[in-house]
Length: 216
Image 1 (cartoon, helix red, strand yellow):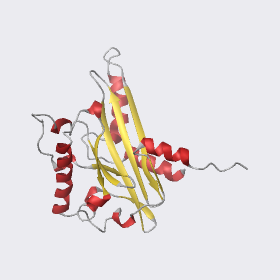
Image 2 (cartoon, one colour; image 1 turned 180 degrees about the vertical axis):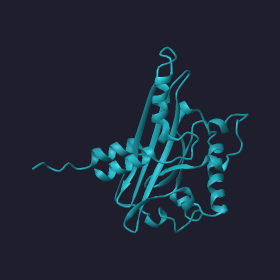
Image 3 (cartoon, rainbow, N blue to C red; image 1 turned 120 degrees about the horizontal axis):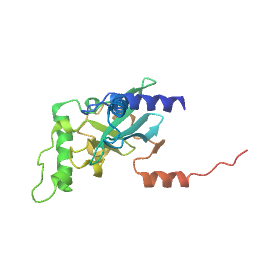
Image 4 (cartoon, rainbow, N blue to C red; image 1 turned 90 degrees about the vertical axis):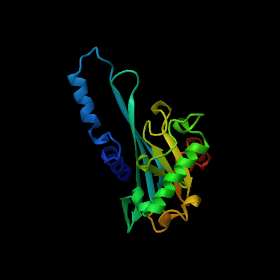
């Protein structure tokens, strides 16, 4: 329990690559409440934290901040925090740890771009797509489950906020020759003892199928 609480606090106040810093969201929101007229607009703020992967070796968390301060809709922020057990201690892992060379980073960018185009995904879809090129700067938030590296895009990076989060799942099999083979995640694969909740349907199904131990 103490370990999970620690990860929750780290994920809640952790630094982010997005333009909005979630560590200051609470302070800014309270100041907005006290400095605004009552009839300006209703206000609300929520933060949710999901365990995407929990194992003895890797823990991956997905955080979502949603703030509503004015019409027409709220704004949001996504963050991912992934920790690997290295030398007996959990340490946070970043994309630069997984993709270390220019060639590896370009593979990741190109893979995501091709996937968006292939599936005609939002801003990359239609006869006249809004975007035809995915900037590398749009790829910075990720989580992992037992099978895939999951890239999560910030609101409006590849699609509308209200239809998000927008993400791409990249199977580890596709990464074998294209990321740093000695990165912390690769060195701990395959995982055999884990709980994964990115796929919620299968996650709850797995819980229901687990045998219930008789109480004493």
